[in-house]
Length: 339
Image (tube, rainbow, N blue to C red; front, side, top):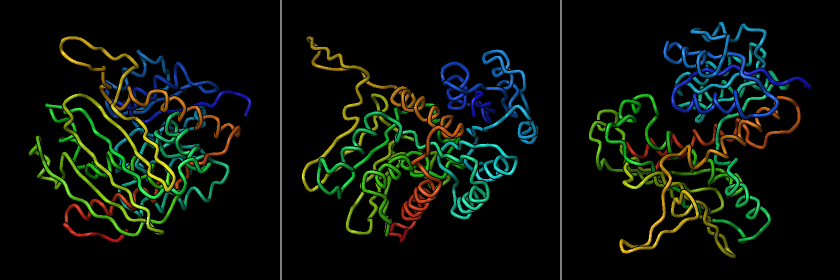
């Protein structure tokens, strides 16, 4: 492909708008030609803020456009599988925000459809794989810097939202582990060399948001995943941090360890005064991973244009869902669950 990749975005909520801005104004070798949303305010945003002429309320109409080469799905997870399959069947490359789906049959349907279209790119948005620090850490592990990795401790902790946006989202999110820890699950497999998961155990508590009880969710959860060969992952997810967003990972090997993202610092400024020693913290996941989101979309565009090959596969995304589901079952049963 020598001309710019023509992209249609589907879903213009909080993250969808971020992706749309990047595609419209800062991602090379692509042009945002179309947008789709059933929400009138989001349609107006596409026209007025992004300058998009082709704005649709129906996904089928966007797929029918001859001016769209690739689709970026930033929609509810329950829609991902059907929408990804429809995009592939329409001859479009497709980017799917994580997770791929909330059940294994849907994941399997997407993989089966993708196999029928080897000339099309299908990519799931595990954005942390594109963060410079995580990439450098994984490369070092692969090079043997810490010997054989055998323990991963990883957490995704969001600042508390007193209005509880995620409480309203909980019935369709798949729960805290599928929504937050799926990133840590994918990182653990990546850092450990993609071992097969055998068993998972989870527990959790509701510290601040009792509304989550109605759908069996928690606002703080801990999970342990056991892998073939003896490696383990310990995962922590929280919706209730007081200070800001904090994503961090520790990988322990036989000859050392690596830590990524410790202390949630916004910058390298440390202030020391009569009140103590402190640094500014990150406010949300997008501020932490803004560079990674840009690199992720650039790699998707490059893969669609035939300039690079993806290392992040649909099979990786399905395994993250498989493990996440076992963790969610364990949270409900209180017992270890086979993966």
